[in-house]
Image 1 (cartoon, one colour):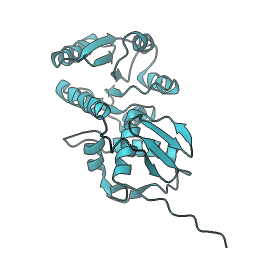
Image 2 (cartoon, rainbow, N blue to C red):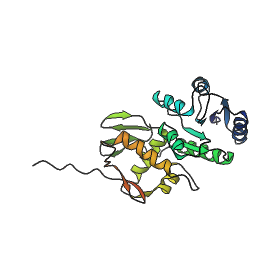
Image 3 (cartoon, rainbow, N blue to C red):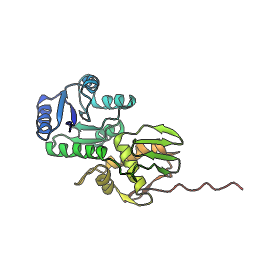
Image 4 (cartoon, rainbow, N blue to C red):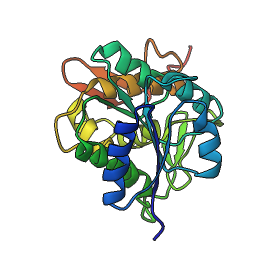
Amino acid sequence: MMKKKILVVDDEPSISMLIEFNLKLVGFEVHCVYDGEEVFTAIQNFRPDVIVLDLMLPKMDGLQVCRKLRSQNNMVPIVMLTAMQDLSDKIAGLDNGADDYMTKPFSPQELISRIQAILRRIQILPSATENAPVEIGHIVIQPDQREVKVKGDSIELTPKEFDLLLFLCKHRGKVLSRQQLLHGVWDYHFLGDTRIVDVHISHLREKIEANARTPELIVTIRNVGYKLAEPRAKESLA
């Protein structure tokens, strides 16, 4: 089996070396670059399965890198690293396309766990029954192709947005807490920051709801979490 490839982007050599050392210990192939602009050459030559991306970088910061990658429809999973404790900085990473984030200083073992969780979610092959299209209202999901259509038009979702939508669909009508979603979608087996869930739900609503401000599909259950509701039949105008 080919080794999974991790691109590490951090301008602090000591941190890059620490991450590279620990990732190689568990069998990953690792390539390090040290500024944001180098990412775009590296992804062409190295073709990473996951990018570990620092927020503060020379030439092009992590947010700019995320935005550019997503604008190019490159949906490689991204784990953002930030030294910022401010929640708004973390949310900014998610808003610009990151799948997860960690705050420095961090445990290399936890970073490895998060990368492995992302890869597990992507690598799981659907069974024959799970290959069948999932339909709810005007949305059609093709699990085997990881494709989503809204009213017949294909939409671009990040890997985590896709996993979240599919998980909600498979549990349609059921109220899911944020912690349940972290466990089921992010594969977290520890208490995680539930704001990750809220930001991804917001992104999904923007892409699949007729009006994200008054969502009819992904419904908020106050003080609990979310559920995917069955679309209401349109009342006939008599």
